Every structure is written in C-alpha cells, then in structure tokens.
Image (cartoon, rainbow, N blue to C red; front, side, top):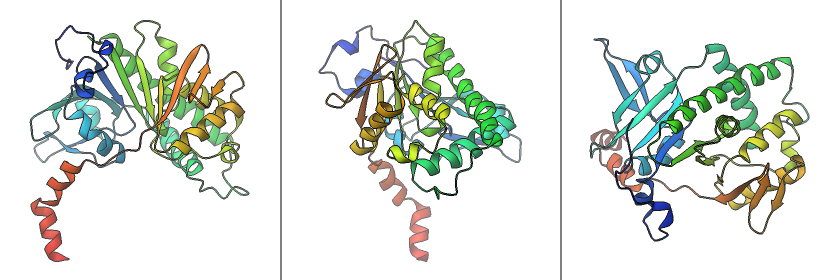
Length: 301
C-alpha cells in the first residue's frame, strides 16, 4: 500500500500546519462509484487506462496529485476487474495514485445504479420528478434497494474497512456523492478501533422536505441515519446543508439538530454540516486548452 510521510509528528495537534502537509500525516482513502481511471485491453491484450472525466474525478484531481492516496471504486469494464488494484501515474510530475476496484454482481449493480442512484435519487435531488405521477415505488424498486443499492454500498464499505485496518497513519476517508449514502453506517458498524475520520461530500443539490417525502420512510431514514455517521458532511451551498438539517429534524426523530452550530447529534455522534463550493482545476484546464487536440478543434471552429 502507498504510505504517507514517514514523519512521526502528530499533524492534528498543529493548527498552523498547511493542509497538504496535514494530509501527509494521514492515510487518505477516497471512495466513489466511478474511479479516477478506466482500463481497456489494447490489441496486444495489454491493459491500458485513461483518466476519468466525471465531475468527482475532476473535483479531486487537484488534491490527489499532491498526496498519497488510495481510491476505491466500482469496476466499470472487464479490464477494470482484471486489473483489480495497483498504482497508476496520475500527473505529469510522475505522482501515482493507488486504485482499487470492487466488482459487484451485474444484477446488484443494475439495481444499485440504474434503479436507485440513477434515476430515483438523482431525479429526486434535482426536483425533476413529475410528482403526481412519478416515481412509482413498487416491488422492483424495493428489490433494487435491498439486493442492489444496499449490497454495493456494503461491498464498498468492506473494501474501505480493509484499507482502514491496514493504515499506517490515522485514516481520513472521503466518501463521494449519492451513490454511497449507506456506506458510512456500514463502516461504523464494522469498526470500533481504529476510529477513522469520515467525510462525505454530496455533489448534487439537497432539496427541501416536500421532495424527501417522495421516498418511503424506510429508505429515507436509512439515508439520513447513515449520513449522520460521518464527522463532516459537505454540500455545494449553505442552502443544501440547511435543507439536510431540516430533513433530519423532520424525519430522524432521535437526532438533535443545532442550526446555530450546524451540528447534528445522533446515536452519540456529532456530524458537522458545511458548504464547500468546489472550484475548478485551473492549471489542468490551461494545460488542456493549450494541447494540440484543442488547438485543432479551435482551428476547425
């Protein structure tokens, strides 16, 4: 496993330390549905990769090219499954990232991604459902929830827990987006020691109470309960964070919500809700804009 800095200093006790220096004294684990790279077999059968173009990958590229990290994600191709895990070069400076793929059963991934995450949760959170008519929560939806969404979230949690237990430094786990809403609670259920720091960032909007009433109470409560297992829950805007806190106040009876401190106390655990508007990677965009491919497109236009 790729390790962090060998210095024995406890960075968490130094409030003046730079953020990147602090991360070098942590074991950084990132988890998302889509990985930072995708593998394909070339004509000679050798595995080649290309960098992912998703929003999560773009948002985190500026960080992971400066620190040692492990990124856990679902395999998207047969080549991903064959490759399984290892280090890949990430940037022009030669920095590498350790990537690990988990491979759910096809039926489980279908329910997890194509029934629950997309479109149910994504459409709900973007307020795009024609509410009087859709969505229809039927037996197939519940099957996708139980045998798909929950199963894949547990699979990712298992892989994360394995990395946490092998971590040489205090683990910092950064969970990404609506695909992994149940993962935090599954991690906490397996671990008492070491106790990792869990962060979860939601890259899409968090709507008001009316839209969360669409989900059956069992699903809604499981999502809220799991997200309240993290230490810091991040959103793009302050309004999104406040909407989440209102949802916990309304639909999570045992939660104590402190709007002034933006803190939720639930199951003897404090979750702090913050807004972190994501910036773009300026240097990477400038490099791309100056590439021969873009210049060729510019000439065509």
